Length: 271
Image 1 (cartoon, one colour):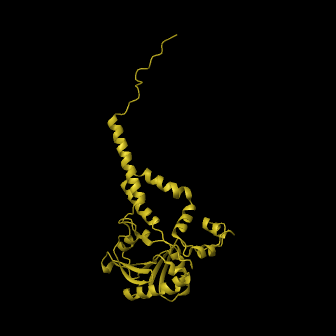
Image 2 (image 1 turned 90 degrees about the vertical axis):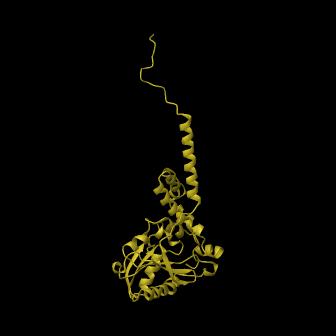
Image 3 (image 1 turned 180 degrees about the vertical axis):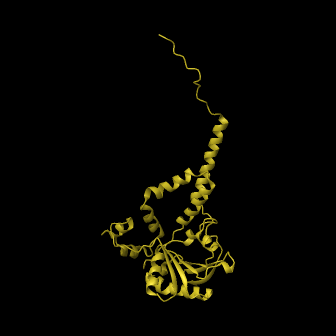
């Protein structure tokens, strides 16, 4: 029976120094503090300078301050029509990562229609009102302040739906270009998309919801949207933040987007 000897070169595992362990603990604590701050505080968003040029009820029309010389600007103003159940800040999240900033840098005369948050007194507002009462007034004001008889319009989400209805019902108002983003226009396939399937179910009654609650709470809309991808929205988003917690650029981007996502508003029940 031969004696077994430990081969030369097989060193014992290195035990970390106590100072290294303390540094690692401090690093984890700092990362956790940063993580907690990102999920519980708001970032500074929508910082691109703009001026208020018109208001009606809760709705406001803004004109962004130009950033290029007059001779370099586009001749046709661009009106951005946002959704009626979100804040429009996603179009201007943070300096260097802003659609509004990008368009200004490329010479566009940029306007933003922010519908605002409806109160109980606005519960009867319908798409008819947004399309045929509010939007024509916005367009008249835009033409007045710019001196242009034509304009382009970019609609986002339900703002795209309102923009589409407006362009169909008022074809002679000078609309030069219509751009639609995430436009909810075709619901003919009742099996496509989570919202369509849910709302097509016999147990779903929108009239009962608005009769009981008045305006549709923003929390209900937000939860419904997140339930389309529950793992990604309730867990994956925070896991991604933790995985990138030591990358300042990624953390700032997450913080800005999360600030917009958390700022939820109700939707007028008439719509």
